[in-house]
Amino acid sequence: MRIRSYFALMMLAIAGLIVGCNSAEMKPPQIVAANSPTPVHAPPNDGVRRVTVTELQDLLAQNKAVVIDVRNEAAYAQGHIKGAKLIPFTEIQNHTGELPKDKTIVTYCS
Image 1 (cartoon, rainbow, N blue to C red):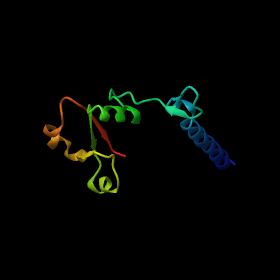
Image 2 (image 1 turned 180 degrees about the vertical axis):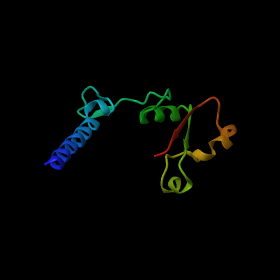
Image 3 (image 1 turned 90 degrees about the horizontal axis):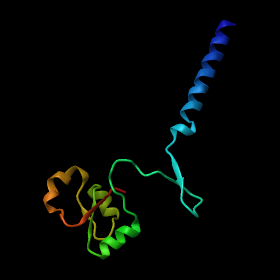
Image 4 (image 1 turned 30 degrees about the vertical axis):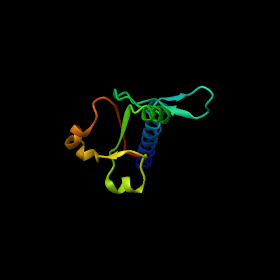
């Protein structure tokens, strides 16, 4: 009887941990844009500016941006943004002199 009680108590504790770990407080905050039923995750708070596809198109049309694909060569060969320059992430330090100082540098990896 003692073993069954101990087992039941352990199962209850494990269930509590599972429920607690999946609670709403642990999930990233979501924002629902106006007129959009799809929730959007809050942007990362890392100080890095993100650009939308439309913003990038405008910057490229105005010759104010350069796109750097930081994936490996095989991924780049499978498909990439038109005009993007391949500089794998592990090699960026070796190519900083090639990057323009007067344009927005947009990197992407997927």
